Length: 389
Ligand SMILES: [Zn+2]
Image (cartoon, rainbow, N blue to C red):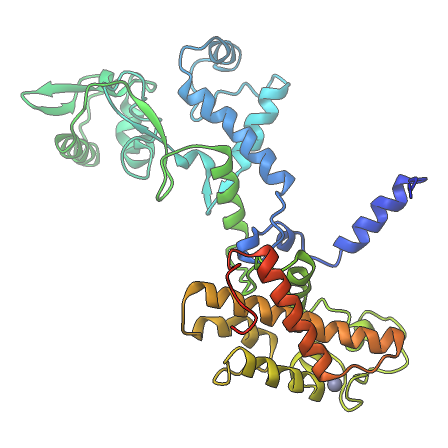
């Protein structure tokens, strides 16, 4: 059968209404952290913009960089990237966006760190090449006396035997106590560094990585944003997506139980659980506290030899794998079976609500066993598992 989309707005509205109940940041978490692994467009955009800054830094002498410098470099007073604010255009937009970007509480320019070789290219005061602070900020009094504020490292230092010292190049020779103290600090620092003689290069200064890549920056931006979000749910590959998504939603309390529907102002005749007719139906009741669920779990636990573990809410269920003894594959199997059980209980509840078919504990257990076996045989790497196992 072929469906014709008559009105695209309806489709967009439909997708939007499905997604709107989820926090954008949850959808964009990677799967192994409990999200859906969808790239956030703004992260991709920021990372691609930053790539231009990176290329500007590393492609010294290239034509496009020379053109930008000629147009925006002015009197060569620029710091991180040249920008002539009186001009409009894409470079201005790009630099303005990059100047507003922060990762981990730091301006993104902080992550650009020069690694001096011969010291010809890196600027002594204005590029970060040693420590966390630009030298112009670290030694402001000396910088104010500097005659060539754009000088390179090799311009600024002179040899004294095997050691390096600040060479002459002052508008006024440092004379006050503070100025001389700053100069002693710089000389002490220079004494302790060695220049390797190869060309100066730029490094991406991130803990554990010196490699700039768009994917890397995207990951950093996302981690920065999601720092405070914790998800216990882990995706399990050998069971179908619908079961994974069911539990992913359950962790966030997004299962449309009767109490959840009532909270969303949907009119329903009763909030009592249809399986036991005793308590209100919410996530923890339907999956753990309900007599019906209890019956299912008792058999499943015995089947999986999990008599010693107990869980009575979603958090407990998502955490208990950590306490299971045994090899990794056994944990994966048990995790999948537990997730399938939750889905089967919910399925039984839906059959009662929508088809008025009263479920039986044994039938739900049988369904969990047969589906698990089917998926293990066809979807997992553990094809040698036998029914009797
Ligand atoms: Zn119940």
